[in-house]
Amino acid sequence: MPGHVTCLVRSWPRLSQTFILNEVLALERLGLELTVVSLTRSGEPTRQAHVAAVRAPVRYLDESRRHDTLARLADHVTVAVRAPRRYASALLLALRSPGLADGYATCSTMRCLAHAVRVAAQLRRTGALRRTGDGAGHLHAHFAHDPALVGLLVHRLTGVRFTFTAHARDLFQLPVPSLLPRIAAASAVITCCQANGDYLTGVLPAGLRDRVHVIPHGLRLDRFHAVPAGDHGGPVRIVSVGRLVEKKGFPDLLRACALVRGAGHRFTCDIYGGGPLADRLERLRDQLDLAGVVVFRGERDQERIAEALAGADVFALTPCVTDDGDRDGIPNVIAEAMACALPVVTTAAGGVLDLVRDGETGLVAPQHDVAAIARNLTTLLTNPRRRRQLGAAGRAAVEEGFDIEVSARRLAALYSGEGTRR
Image (spheres, rainbow, N blue to C red):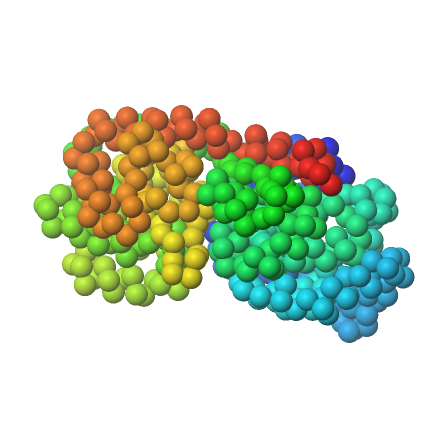
């Protein structure tokens, strides 16, 4: 097992980032001592119930403290006095390389250095480095943009071993010259799907490619149970879940629903999630004459989503790659639906094909192919036997490759230095 692990995130807790919460809880079940450090509070009114089960202390870097300027200066002095060469190296890197924060980012390189100094000082104040020795312990950052840059700079300041997970937009909207220094400093870079892994190995020099590890997020499978499938005689119940943002492809799903309804098929479609496209999507629904058929239910926590999946007959999510490169890895909610033995209709975008095999564990259409999405929905609406077959195969696929306990053990091994070059 590694020593103390600092888990660095952009904001905490995020309703849409259940995969990070699940990972923290799984690592704690393995016995790891964690601290969660968040650059900012999420500020979201709804949170997952399981957040309360996290034992790790949570520290927010954006919280103001009394005499804040003096406190921040004290952090710099603490870090500089303890390791002056490391401090000078990190400061020079930040001053000479402002482009490290190019692309998708919310903080400048110097702002990331300020965050890194606070993290380094906290590690010393809380004894994490004193207990394990200078350079021991571990820091893992979620997302390749701001958190990974902060992690790189903490590594420079302290020598603590550093890894990060690259997920989606944070990877594909980061310029390669900004990404490479992060990977060069890290002992491993982790991503959730083979599509992301292939992209990384394609842009990396040969000497860095073996630092790429594909580890799916995973689910706590005992929380998801197969839903008995049957022909209940009423309209088929479709459920979709996701943030109301472009990469989730909800306009394509709505247009496909309009085609299915126009062909005379009866169904309902509940869409769970919130986001900036909510008003636009509701207007599109009404323009397509789907009011009363498609209902936007808003944001809900995982317990409520599990209830919605348990009451559904079909799960549908039609993600896409946006013009600016944004995309999903593997949407966790697809795995959750499959864990409930729900048949899935989806599209071949991002890492979806890692989990959903067309015709075997779900039905997959090309992204933006509304006619193909509609055909797949029609297949499941009209064929209860097919729904049962795909649902059972989907549950088996998730059991085989999406267990959070397996993923957590692989992560813990990387944190301890096993299977890494550094």
